[in-house]
Amino acid sequence: MAAPSTPTNFNLQSGDGNAFLSWDITATATSYVVQRSPDGVTYTTRATITGSPLKNYYLDEGESVDGPEENTTYFYKVAAANGDGTSSYTDPQNTIITAIGIVSLGYLRLTAQQRCDRVNSTFVSLTEWNKYITESRKELYDILTLKFGDDYYVATPYTYTLGGNQNLYPLPADFYKLLGVEIALNPGDSLSWVTLKKFEFIQRNRWNYPNVYTFYGVTNLRYRLNGNNIMIVPVPSGGQTLRIWYAPRPSVLMADTDIVDGVSGWEEYIIIDAAIKALAKEESDVSVFMAQKKFMLERIEQAAENRDAGEPEQVSDTKSRNFGWGDDDGSYGGSGGYF
Image (tube, rainbow, N blue to C red; front, side):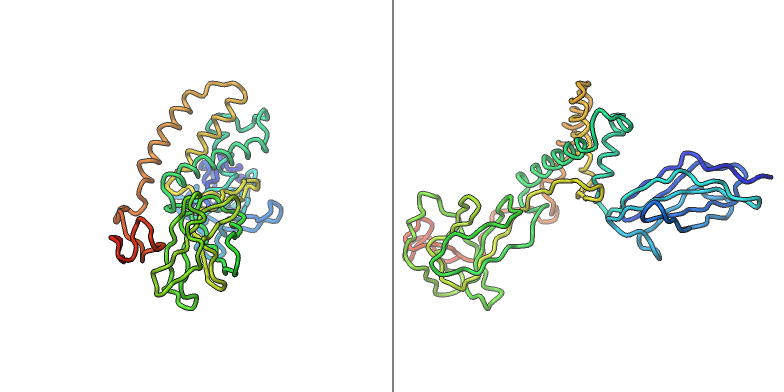
């Protein structure tokens, strides 16, 4: 009996922090050797598969000893063996290990190419594919951000220490959409945050008297976005702490290891839309993909509407009232009262 032949139909998939390898059963094989490499050059044996029946697959689990690390590229290859020797290894395949719900640019590009049967086509360059995917990802990002606010994309709150005689403060470099503004009425008390209301631009001089607050929950400060700044009126007292909650801008995808949160398989929208862009460039029919995109959009809108299914959104009072004396929404002696 001779050494077995090299395994055929070697496939590699990744997801949820794991890598899954599979291949066709090799006649006369009594074991399989799985090798892994971080660079495609230096390989080490990751597993030797034995037993009866002999399995023709292997799961490289992220939580196992020396398991694959997330957001890292790995190369895999497989050989068949028996008592007479070991076959040559399959051609290596590589994948990027991603966490649950996370996909990489490399995965998105390959899947979009497979979807429209353009894996080996050079009509659309790698740079163009990456650009199409970035644009499609931004489209999905806008759908979730504009319709569902802070449910999906929220940056770490950005904090300012207010200075005297200044009412314009620069927005963060990655600022996209404002979700809320609040001020600590007592900088030393972590429970003294009060939500600020927005003022209309025509009202920018309405509160031009010194900022006065008497107890937690009362301030006449208001805000408005002003170009690349946030504007606070009236001029706040120095030393106060202001913070903003915001959705960041989506990044440009360039490296194959750049990742996207697919949430619940919604990366399918990116894949379909990128395929449409590629086929449109070569003037091919995109009608089937347009129908798929419409279906996917409906699915996302229905599923994403309320991420917290156990406690739907409702009209709520804020922690306390943010007003200026004489405002229509309440004043001393008026109907507003304290919340």
